Image (cartoon, rainbow, N blue to C red; front, side, top):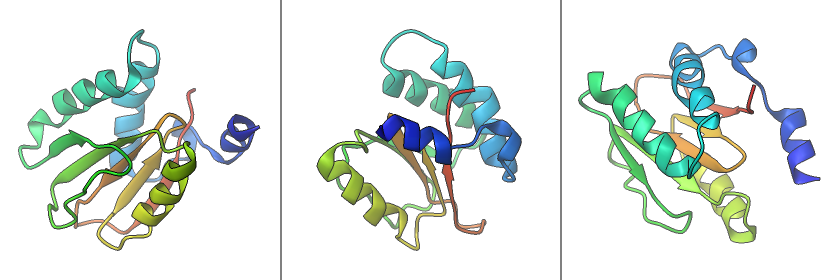
Length: 128
Protein backbone atom coordinates (compact mmCIF):
# COMPACT_ATOMS: atom_id res chain seq x y z
CA UNK A 1 0.00 0.00 0.00
CA UNK A 2 2.90 2.38 0.78
CA UNK A 3 4.31 1.80 -2.70
CA UNK A 4 0.93 2.59 -4.29
CA UNK A 5 0.64 5.89 -2.39
CA UNK A 6 4.24 6.73 -3.25
CA UNK A 7 3.65 6.09 -6.97
CA UNK A 8 0.52 8.25 -6.88
CA UNK A 9 2.50 11.26 -5.54
CA UNK A 10 5.72 10.64 -7.47
CA UNK A 11 6.64 12.08 -10.83
CA UNK A 12 9.05 11.22 -13.60
CA UNK A 13 11.18 13.42 -15.86
CA UNK A 14 8.19 15.06 -17.57
CA UNK A 15 7.10 16.91 -14.44
CA UNK A 16 10.47 18.27 -13.34
CA UNK A 17 11.08 22.02 -13.52
CA UNK A 18 14.55 22.03 -12.00
CA UNK A 19 17.28 21.65 -14.66
CA UNK A 20 19.67 20.01 -12.19
CA UNK A 21 17.15 17.47 -10.90
CA UNK A 22 15.95 16.75 -14.45
CA UNK A 23 19.53 16.08 -15.56
CA UNK A 24 20.21 13.91 -12.51
CA UNK A 25 17.02 11.95 -13.10
CA UNK A 26 17.61 11.32 -16.81
CA UNK A 27 21.39 10.77 -16.71
CA UNK A 28 22.01 9.21 -13.29
CA UNK A 29 18.98 8.03 -11.30
CA UNK A 30 16.89 6.34 -13.99
CA UNK A 31 19.85 4.54 -15.62
CA UNK A 32 20.98 3.35 -12.16
CA UNK A 33 17.54 1.80 -11.55
CA UNK A 34 18.16 -0.44 -14.55
CA UNK A 35 21.42 -1.87 -13.18
CA UNK A 36 21.63 -4.96 -11.01
CA UNK A 37 23.16 -4.70 -7.55
CA UNK A 38 22.85 -2.56 -4.43
CA UNK A 39 21.00 0.55 -5.57
CA UNK A 40 22.48 2.83 -2.90
CA UNK A 41 26.11 2.05 -3.69
CA UNK A 42 25.48 2.08 -7.46
CA UNK A 43 23.81 5.48 -7.14
CA UNK A 44 26.62 6.81 -4.95
CA UNK A 45 29.20 5.86 -7.59
CA UNK A 46 27.08 7.27 -10.42
CA UNK A 47 26.56 10.56 -8.53
CA UNK A 48 30.25 10.83 -7.70
CA UNK A 49 31.09 10.38 -11.40
CA UNK A 50 28.40 12.88 -12.42
CA UNK A 51 29.62 15.54 -10.00
CA UNK A 52 33.31 15.23 -10.97
CA UNK A 53 32.74 18.32 -13.10
CA UNK A 54 31.55 20.12 -9.96
CA UNK A 55 34.60 19.99 -7.67
CA UNK A 56 32.70 21.46 -4.73
CA UNK A 57 30.23 18.58 -4.40
CA UNK A 58 30.89 15.89 -1.81
CA UNK A 59 28.63 12.80 -2.11
CA UNK A 60 28.16 10.93 1.19
CA UNK A 61 25.96 8.05 2.33
CA UNK A 62 24.60 8.32 5.84
CA UNK A 63 22.18 6.32 7.90
CA UNK A 64 18.88 8.01 8.64
CA UNK A 65 19.96 8.39 12.24
CA UNK A 66 23.39 9.61 11.15
CA UNK A 67 24.83 13.02 11.70
CA UNK A 68 24.46 15.52 8.89
CA UNK A 69 26.74 18.53 8.69
CA UNK A 70 24.17 21.22 7.92
CA UNK A 71 26.94 23.79 7.46
CA UNK A 72 28.57 21.99 4.51
CA UNK A 73 26.95 23.83 1.62
CA UNK A 74 28.45 21.57 -1.03
CA UNK A 75 27.18 18.32 0.44
CA UNK A 76 24.90 15.79 -1.18
CA UNK A 77 23.70 13.11 1.23
CA UNK A 78 22.12 9.77 0.35
CA UNK A 79 19.85 8.60 3.15
CA UNK A 80 18.88 4.91 2.92
CA UNK A 81 15.88 3.30 4.65
CA UNK A 82 13.62 6.34 4.72
CA UNK A 83 10.59 4.01 4.68
CA UNK A 84 11.42 2.41 8.03
CA UNK A 85 9.38 3.44 11.05
CA UNK A 86 12.03 5.72 12.53
CA UNK A 87 13.34 6.65 9.11
CA UNK A 88 10.10 8.26 7.90
CA UNK A 89 9.94 10.66 10.85
CA UNK A 90 13.64 11.51 10.62
CA UNK A 91 13.30 12.08 6.87
CA UNK A 92 10.41 14.50 7.37
CA UNK A 93 12.43 16.40 9.99
CA UNK A 94 15.45 16.59 7.68
CA UNK A 95 13.60 17.98 4.68
CA UNK A 96 12.03 20.71 6.81
CA UNK A 97 15.48 22.10 7.61
CA UNK A 98 16.04 25.47 5.91
CA UNK A 99 19.60 24.46 4.98
CA UNK A 100 18.35 21.56 2.82
CA UNK A 101 17.74 23.16 -0.58
CA UNK A 102 16.64 20.11 -2.61
CA UNK A 103 15.27 16.87 -1.25
CA UNK A 104 14.66 14.01 -3.64
CA UNK A 105 12.65 11.11 -2.35
CA UNK A 106 13.10 7.84 -4.17
CA UNK A 107 11.21 4.93 -2.70
CA UNK A 108 14.35 3.20 -1.47
CA UNK A 109 16.25 6.23 -0.25
CA UNK A 110 16.38 9.98 -0.07
CA UNK A 111 18.83 12.54 -1.42
CA UNK A 112 19.57 15.83 0.33
CA UNK A 113 21.26 18.75 -1.43
CA UNK A 114 22.54 21.84 0.33
CA UNK A 115 23.53 23.98 -2.63
CA UNK A 116 22.78 27.52 -1.46
CA UNK A 117 22.01 29.20 -4.80
CA UNK A 118 18.58 27.74 -5.45
CA UNK A 119 15.08 27.99 -4.01
CA UNK A 120 14.01 25.21 -1.63
CA UNK A 121 12.19 22.36 -3.41
CA UNK A 122 11.15 18.81 -2.52
CA UNK A 123 10.81 16.14 -5.21
CA UNK A 124 9.30 12.66 -5.18
CA UNK A 125 10.57 10.61 -8.13
CA UNK A 126 9.65 7.17 -9.42
CA UNK A 127 11.13 4.78 -11.93
CA UNK A 128 10.08 5.48 -15.48
